[in-house]
Length: 316
Image 1 (cartoon, rainbow, N blue to C red):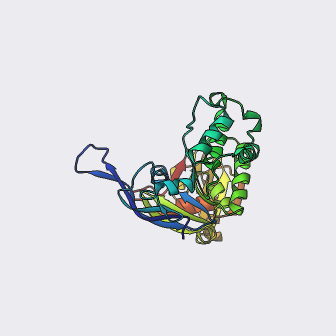
Image 2 (spheres, helix red, strand yellow; image 1 turned 90 degrees about the vertical axis):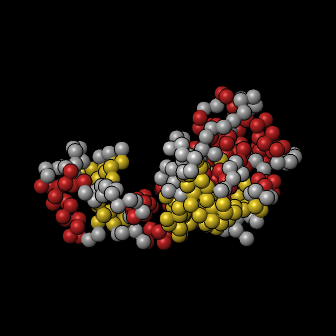
Image 3 (cartoon, one colour; image 1 turned 180 degrees about the vertical axis):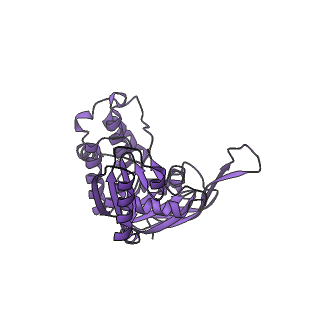
């Protein structure tokens, strides 16, 4: 039995253009199974359908077609059982402004019929660095602290399946380290984790398998190690302080001062470096590194891009 099963899931919305006959397909026959105990990554650019898929999984929206289940419980026909097995940390900072942290966790326990839960609540507060905030009103917390409370709320009924939708977006390094240490511990104890994130180094470090979505479709699905092995070789990387000439942008990935090229062989590396020298560029911190998950992700997205998409990608 899969921990999470998406079977040919589609979701259509009315077209943004307003035509009664047109629809926008946010999800297009998505099928994938996540096994019990997996740490699974769901990646994709903005608008790929990740949050729509999670919203359907959480029962906040209905799929236009297809079936979704959590440990065998259908999210529509057996929704009460499916909700009890699932803990979802949403992207948005949603909280009740009338309660302090401990009260919010106690009420959340009650929603799931869990009584005498103070010992687990204390463990959550300690593990997430919230012990000294237990009696603070939710309105008085910083954004990072509210994010920690959202994680605690999702875990307070001890769900066997945990869904994290961009849990570290806009938070500090300390929270990331605290959160991942705690979630990794729960995963080692048997919890299934589904993670969406734009921090691909997190996905590479944490996830055993990864699915990539683009325009509502699964465009890659494999183990993290297999995806990395399939990447096209090494990457030449250096920094510059001036504008890269248009002729050198072809095939380049530019992130601020950092320029990266696919280093397929020694000849390609020398060709890029020679062209940079001829253009009068001063190169800093030159290195050749192994392709990482970000390289794989961009390669997969480019492979499934429209033919007219530009070759060079400039990230600002």
